Image (cartoon, rainbow, N blue to C red; front, side):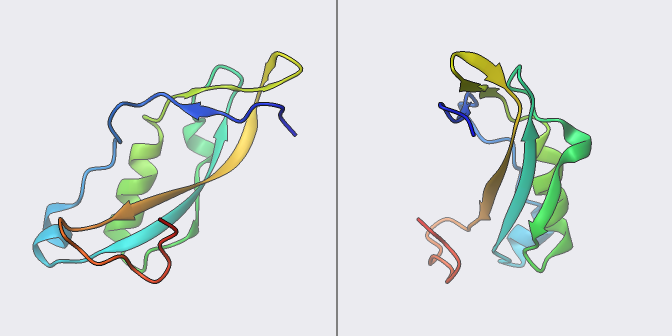
Length: 104
């Protein structure tokens, strides 16, 4: 277990709402499992969908965007360490009502 959890560095999230799903007013949550290495980079081949949204396009966009996430690495006793973590991606329309699974 790390003493310090990884902290995201991205100023903007790299997840682009798929246009057909946006126009069809599709919303959903995707839960990803990420492996963040000791430099703070996500190892793309290790990223997995652990809870799909029910919409394949949203799941694919979440997986693709995860590779662009950057973190301050987790630390144990001051040393950067790799960690695995769960990362939620929420696809919401402007003014949309939170879904039942939303935690925020």
